[in-house]
Amino acid sequence: MPFANIARLSVGEDIDETRQVALPFSSPQPHIALPIGQAVVLLSRHRLEQLAEEATTAWNTEAERLACIDGQRAEALLKAASSNPADTDNAPRDPDAHHLLAHFIEQGQAFILSGAPPQPQPYVTVRYLASRASLHAGRGDILFHLPDAPSPFFVLNWWVS
Image (tube, rainbow, N blue to C red; front, side, top):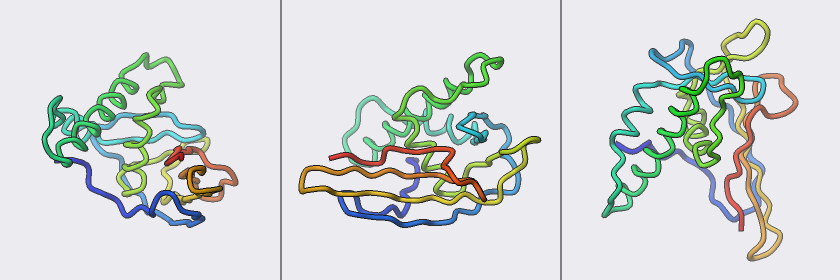
């Protein structure tokens, strides 16, 4: 089953919209941990493995194509989490995998720790920021902020034209 669609805004438009996303109160078990900026994002290992297993190399429908993409992204996240545990920077190196990470956060399916000592975060603020300079020139980013943090801990390049 492909990852559920989220209610994102339209690409290619001037946008500055902010949403608050509630996060779960407990971490998924089993989980993978991905250090991202000043946070550690915990994702369901089962859900990622399910996405990876459902991916096919051949597709005939749009749903199958999207499942294939999500599966490849899930594999990249699992690979990043299985890298050297002593490496404190095992964030996914594949920027395409960041899109799946963003989906988990936007849907409130990520458990996020931050601070010293690390504390569970009750919510994230998601800011959609896009600007279109002309018909064929613009970009959009999605910025993820922790509570009371002035700068985002994670920025996703959402679209470019």
